[in-house]
Image 1 (cartoon, rainbow, N blue to C red):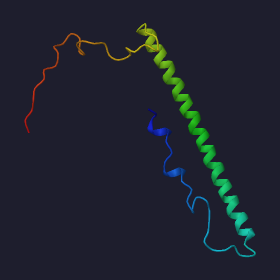
Image 2: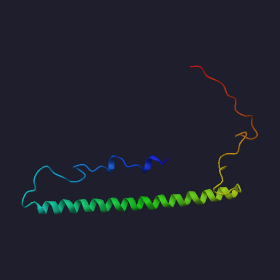
Image 3: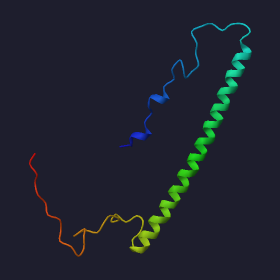
Length: 107
């Protein structure tokens, strides 16, 4: 079963707004306005692409940091990164102290 992030959402739908369709017929002499609007959209998309590239580089840096930290910690525990026992060791979670007592609470 795939994860939810892989599915397409509402942002993938092409509506009249996202397709830049108009119900009005095109008028003569409006070419300059259309060129201006296309230029602004091109600038906006260029800025958005630059922001995405910056965000992607930050994500890759953070993933590399996490990978290095996992390797360091697994070497300290003498485990391989693929080991399924990367969680806390079984038994008493507070060594040297009594285990937690459980009690039911009535509301």
